[in-house]
Amino acid sequence: MASASATDVPERTPSSQTYLSTRGGDYGLSFETVVLKGLAQDGGLFLPEVVPTAEGWESWKDLPYAELAHKILSLYISSDEIPSADLKDIIDRSYATFRAQEVTPLVHLKDNLYLLELFHGPSYSFKDCALQFLGNLFEYFLVRKNQGKEGKDRHHLTVVGATSGDTGSAAIYGLRGKRDVSVFILHPKGRISPIQEKQMTTVLDDNVHNIAVTGTFDDCQDIVKAMFADPDANAALKLGAVNSINFARILAQIVYYFHSYFALAKTSSSFKVSDKVRMVVPTGNFGDILAGYFARRMGLPIEKLVIATNENDILDRFWKTGRYEKKPVHGPDTENGLAVDGAKADPSGVRETLSPAMDILVSSNFERLLWFLAYEFAATTGMDDEWTKKQAGQEVEVWLSDLKKKGGFGPVYKDVLESARRTFESERVTDAQTLETIKKFYKDIGYVLDPHTAVGVAAAERSIERAGVDVPHISLSTAHPAKFAGAVSEALKDAEGFDFEKTVLPEEFVELAKKETRLLEAENSWVAVRELVKKQIAHDLGL
Ligand SMILES: Cc1ncc(COP(=O)(O)O)c(C=O)c1O
Ligand SMILES: N[C@@H](CCOP(=O)(O)O)C(=O)O
Image (cartoon, rainbow, N blue to C red):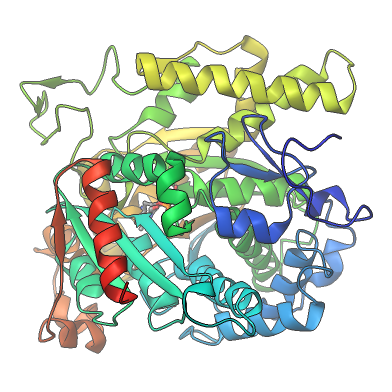
C-alpha cells in the first residue's frame, strides 16, 4: 500500500507492526512514530494496519504478567525497532512498581461473577497498567534519539494530556523526573475528587505541571486535540500524548484481558481455556474496552464486551439507536443547566455524577471502533484491501466531521449497527443504582467497590440476567475506592462497622493531605493553554 507520509520501517515488517490513521491520511508508520506523535496529522487516531492473530495463545496460560505482556506486545512492535531484550526490560520495569504480585489479581465476587482488580499500581487506578509502560517507552525512545546530543539539539518532548482524574496522576507518576520530557496535565477545575487532585498537584518535580481549566473534561480533551492539530505548537513544542489517543495505551491494556481469562481458568474448575466469557467495562473514553475488542479480534474467546456507562450515556444511546449525538433528543436532558431529575448538568450536556472519571461526552477511542465497523462494511463489496481501507477512512472522516459541525451523526447503516451489536452490549447505570450496588456488595460480602467499578458491576448483574448464570463474567475494577471518598462514604454511611479511614484509606493517601501543592490555572481556550505551555517550557529549558 502506498504511503501518504514517511514510510520509516523496513519492507519486511508485518502489517500488524505498521500503522495507519483512522482518517486515511497516513499509512506505513512505525511504532516509534506512532508513540511519539500520538495523534495523526489528519486528526485521526493510529491503528495497526492488521490486528495480529495470537497464534497458540492457549499455551500462554501460565506465564507471569510481564512475560505475557512481552508475547502480546511483540506482535505489534517490530524487533527491528525495539530489540526483544530491550522490550522485555521496559516491560519488567513497568510492572515491578505494582503492589500485587499478579499485577492485576482476579477476585471472586459471587457465582459466576469475577472482579479484575486493576488498581494495584502507583496511582491506584487501571491507568497505571499502561502509563508506567508508556513512561518507560518515551524514555527509551528519547535516550536513543538524543545519544551524543547536547543542549538545544536534544529532542525535548512536551507531553500534554487531559484528565478527568486518573490518567493525570498515572501519567505524572510514569514521567516524573525523566530527562528530556515535560508533562502538562489539564483537568476540569473543581470536577475531580480531592484525592485525585492531591495525587497530581503534590508532585513537585520540575518537569511536571498541572493546569486547572475552567470547563469540563471534554473541553480539556478538545484543547489537547487542538494543540496537536496546530502545526506551530507541534513544531515548537514536539508534542506527545499520554491519553488513550496514544495507541501504546491501548496496546498495554490488551494484556490484562488475556491475563484475567487465564486467571479464571486457573480459579474455576468448571471453566477451561477455550470457553467463552463476558467482559464488563466501566466506560468513558472507550480506551479500556477497545483493548478488550483487540483481545477478541486476536482470538481470545470473549462472547460479548459489555459497555457500562454512567448517566453520561452517549455510547449507550448509540447502541440503542445507531445515533451518536452529544445532546440526547429524549432522556436525560437538561433544563436551565440542571438535569430534570435534579442532578447537576453542564449546559454542554455533561452531567456531574458519582463516577466523575467517566463524565465524558465524546469518547475519543470510539473513532477507532468506527474505523473497524466501516472497514468491515466496506469489505462486503469484495474490493481489494487498499480500496477498503481508503473507504473506511473516508467514512470515519464524514462521521467525525458531522460530530464536530452538527454535534452528532447517524443513524449509521443497519449493517454497521448490527455488527457493533454482535460484539458489544451496553448498559446505562444511574447514580442511585451505583450507590445501591456499593451498598449491596459491602453488605453481602464486605467488599468495597469504587463508584466506577460499581457502574460495571451493576451492568454485569444485568448482563448475567440476559446471558444466564452459566456464562462467566469478568467485570473490570478500574479504581481503588479510596480515590472516591465522597461516593463511597455516601453509600456506606449507615453500614454497620464501616469506617472509611480504617477500612479503605491507604496510609499513602493520608500523607498526601500534608504535602505542598503546585497548580496553574487557565481559561477554557486552547490558545491560552498553548501560550501558558510555551512560556513554561521556555522557563524550564532556560530559553
Ligand atoms: C476509574 C475509571 N474508570 C473507568 C474509566 C473509563 O475508562 P475509558 O476512558 O478507557 O473508557 C476511567 C477513565 O478513563 C476511570 O478513570
Ligand atoms: N477517565 C480518564 C479520562 C481520560 O481518558 P484516557 O484514557 O483517554 O486518558 C481520566 O481519568 O483522566
